[in-house]
Amino acid sequence: MSARLAKRERGVVLLFCLIVLVILLAGGVAVVRSMHTSLTSAGNLAFRRDLVNQGERAVSAVLTKFATGGTLATATADVPAENFKASRLDTNAQGMPTVLFDDTAFATVGKTSNDIVDATAQVSIRYVIDRLCTASGTATSTGCVQSSAAPSGGTAGPVPPPPPPTATVYRLSMRVSGPRDTQVFLQSTFTKPD
Image (cartoon, rainbow, N blue to C red; front, side, top):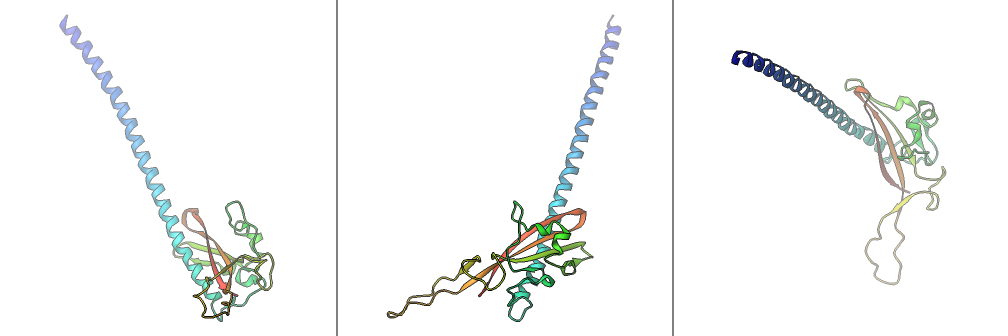
């Protein structure tokens, strides 16, 4: 009788071990998939961070164009050859100019030949500059977003201090595309004294 009971117990233990083995196998597969997802996410974040850093190249190139003697130093009208719009561009809900999302629309305000391309890093930077004004022409305090410098010190006497200089605000918007179809949209604003 005890031999028959021992055989029956061995069969139950084997069944229990198989169930535990299946559970452990499923857990192992879940851990491997979780690690794969984590590594993919970390890789995508690294690509995005690199594209943000690459976008700095466009900022440097654009600021050179606005420096004294640059191609846009005195621009008050649209200059499509330099991706410059003298009035505010239409934007989407996130505040990005819609021309960066459509190549046909972009052709109305800029040239694709101005894209900054690094074939080695597989990075392409498309940018557009718009002056935050309602119309082209000379910047005015009523038609443009302007910042002013704080007045400097007091005056000695009844002569009022001169008004602070004004500076028109410009917006640089970029679409940086990289490997694995990664895209980053960036914006920066800067001023240029009138």
